[in-house]
Image (cartoon, rainbow over all chains, first blue to last red; front, side):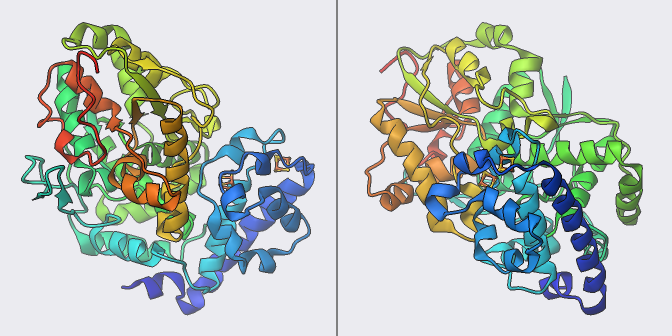
Length: 175
Length: 289
Ligand code: SF4
Ligand code: SF4
């Protein structure tokens, strides 16, 4: 099974999209009730100065139901998951969770997954971890491995086939 | 005290110094670590792709420890949050728990909610305690001004029960004081390292790293202390590149908290993986400058 199966699997993706849509409309109801556009989330946003992300505007667009625009925007991929917006919102709105839902939707809708996410997913699918064990540099410019350092074998899924089986079912499971 | 060590991905595949120093100091603090086979990624770094994956991967890892009747120690704050959030969701939503367990049954696993999940600070500060650490200090540091970096996931969102105060965390400072350091406040203390952007915007990630380190350096700190393998990869392993992105020559010694505890206990630098820190750490010695 490959990443393509996981993220754009024909019929079944319809189900995934339906579920993310439901999640988004729940969030939409929530923000419509509670967010009063004070922009406290944006004032502390780690991605604001550097990448021009404005979480309160994301919320404003969601309030107006402009989900397609949001899903197609590159801006949603600039959030660095610092959780400050969720921590500090006086109304207990969580812009970060809206952003996660929008990104999940972008993937389920078959938009290209940006950057290295594809490789990370691929790696989780095949060995269970984000990346395989690496050899690393030392201060004196040597290269050492995990075992050189006396560390035990890395823990990873014992039966990759069964593990993959679980993940593949997940791709069509409700979110 | 006995815990299953949940290593996650980044620590056991490249941030070996964190793992080595944890394996060295924990037994000396009467914390037994048990290695289990079969763990996978916690799923948090791919939450942007599919949140359900995160939930199921985390539940799967918790279930592995539950099967052995063990509580879980997750040294990586990102893993720790993923496992804690999953526990919170599954313990309060039985239909979600059922759904996740249907998947886990393929591997003969079941999530029940019986295991506790603790972070590096939960263990060091709340379980072991500074008094005990103090007793173990043989070679204290002296007169070194330390900047702390908690890592976003260790302190936010507080709604999910994090390890310290979200706006004014002090537990790392308290531990550093018992080792002889002089931790001090700096305005950028809560800023993010940018590490999770590495997946799609690596340059911006490095800019965040460089900006924070530069202000720490400008404020005259002697060293920078972290507890997260993602953050440490940014601040230590990639420090030179981070400096280039902000046009600064960064020369900031960066340590894992666990390495400093180990050094002050008199453990040799080899065993604590100090040879793997790529930032200029040589000027920092026990006993003072
Ligand atoms: S901080 Fe909360 S209430 Fe204020 S704009 Fe942001 S989401 Fe809305
Ligand atoms: S979690 Fe994302 S949106 Fe929220 S403050 Fe941090 S970078 Fe900004």
